[in-house]
Amino acid sequence: MDRFFQALRDQGVNAALLDDILAFRGRYPVEETLRARLLPPALPYYGRETFEMAASALIQGENILLTGTKATGKNVLAENLAWMFGRPSWNISFHVNMDSSALIGTDTFRNNEVQLRTGPVYDCAVGGGFGIFDEINMAKNDAVSVLHATLDYRRILDVPGYEKIQLHDATRFIGTMNYGYAGTRELNEALVSRFLVIEMPPVTEDALHYVLTEIFPDFTREGLQQIYGLFLDLQTKANNNEISTKPLDLRGLIGALKTVRAGLAPRLAVRMGIVNKSFDLFERELVEDIVMTRIPESWTPGDIFSM
Image (cartoon, rainbow, N blue to C red):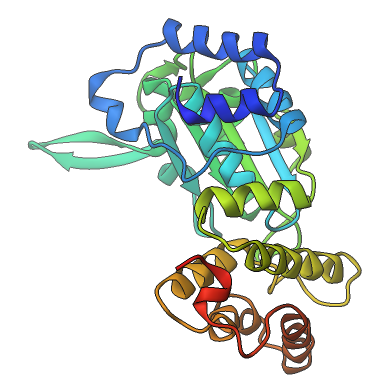
């Protein structure tokens, strides 16, 4: 039993659900050629109810859409699900220029003949993988509309000019989306109807404590309290619309802490990872004030980590 299963058992996740996941893994072994796509996540997911909803849907053959604000762990959950179900994963990042041929495949000239150069959705469908549609609300409607038959009960992929493909029984799709990012749009109703939608809850103190100590087990007690207190302060300000979500960057905070561990002064590190993410001068000053209440100028790396 790997640490990801153990972490969920420790959180009280339904034991029968975890047994069903193990049975799923046994039922659908992964081909040797796809094992390179079995990628362990950086850390286990923390959130019992959310995990149980997502895993139950996937076991029943449904696709899921993870929605919510920034820094709620959507990608961490998607990566954990793919790993725990033992499935190869394809991460498909959407952008305004993504079209159907980039998803399914396009003709190419190879060995003196025209052949199909398959796209990630095609490979995922045939390989029994978990396809992660990252920022799906940045996609053009005509790009994802070709997937309607793939995502509903028909579970087929009709490639123009080629054979119709029946999805592997283990294939599932997980969409993620943030609100209010530049370039995002309202999702087509027909597309949303093909997912079960999970609203990701805001990061709690317990979840943040868990994530930070998983990555940095050598925190000092005071350092840990002030770091997660800083993030929660920023989250409260963002929820109250006092600042934007730009400084609310958990990846940035983790990156900053890595530079502290390498010897950089904590205040300088947090400036890179959090404060400078805001390009509005007034907002940057507000964020700097929040940082000052949590991280004194005099702090050294030894105040954050046991060195």
